[in-house]
Image 1 (cartoon, rainbow, N blue to C red):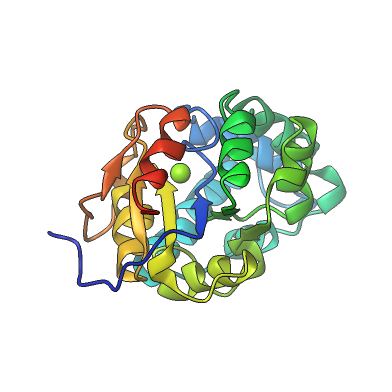
Image 2 (cartoon, protein in one colour):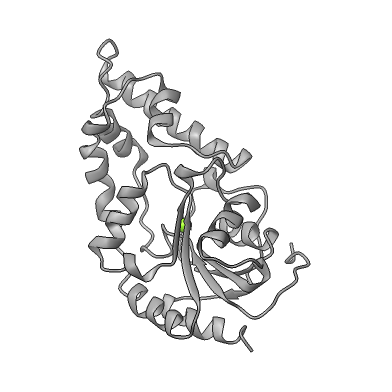
Length: 242
Ligand SMILES: [Mg+2]
């Protein structure tokens, strides 16, 4: 599929995906994730195997609705889907399970500094069920939080990528009116590349992620450019500012 007709202008903003884009891609053991989530369950009348199986199925259901209907969810929605009560104060094990996979790529800080020096606005749009505090905390831990002009997490929106409404929310968060003046950078050809192009943006693909088959959508976009390293993004964008 070729890129849709778009009214493209000189670039004013670059918006990034998070997982597999600003972080290194890691394959995730979703059974181990469910075991960690189960630590937060306060419902006592199910056996542990049943609890873990319910959480695993709930995760598939929640992310399936994101893929097929661009419907967002929160951690609380996942437990509700599983029919289990949870205590958010008991999510430590789940947080600790994910934490090693949240490290910001060392090229992010110099890349963002370069883009900002060039007068560009920079932002994030992430499909996520996690609360803002977690994401902002990861960026803060790694010293890059203050480098972003806008951070949009779909756990705070009704929609997920590839909905054009999710991309519009990110564009508004960085203060740019025209999607044709925005670039989106991501690792998924459906959510990120096809989605941002449908929303009228240019798209840059980071092609190093092994997207699980169940997470692949109905379309794949052809990126306007490919960046094998984040440090290549400023030069790619500079070519679109002339
Ligand atoms: Mg990603």
